[in-house]
Length: 251
Image (cartoon, rainbow, N blue to C red; front, side):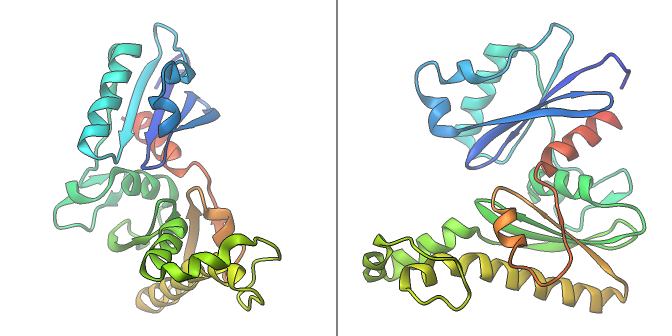
């Protein structure tokens, strides 16, 4: 990447489309739009404009119909763009999946951004889904876990036990593990559950590798989960965009 090159990076997740302008010295401002807002008339006017020499890059984990719609929008607005995909290996990081293409590109790029050579890593991405990925100090991805994110946990409970819905009329009080109100008990549990599996994974990974483990938390609900952790962790809000920048910078 030359000092004059600029990039517009799009991270298309299940809930929203995020983007960032990037120069040679790093990511500048970031923005986002929820999918329903993009679908309304003139919604795509919210997308940024680009200069003639700016490169547009996409990473997406969407269902095929939504992916095709977004690709069409980007092609109509920007002309050419390139799309990043999961690789078997890059920059010292090696996928642990038997079929690397089945690993979501968001997880791959987040690991690429978070892992440092010589460090063992536990990466937790807390968004629509909660994903955990482990990487050893040599850059070998050991695999991962996928479960519902905070909203999905609560929705799943209410679908299985709809009678609990009546307790959610109130939303008073601080979220606590030992809630004194049913509404708070329901709303508090997902973040504590996420924190619990992250701490369990960190302990097991450290025991397995026999070295200290760096824990990195990313995603839209990362702050809520980090606040409930009893282990040290780093908060990285735009980790997929960071990984996209690293990938294009080192290309």
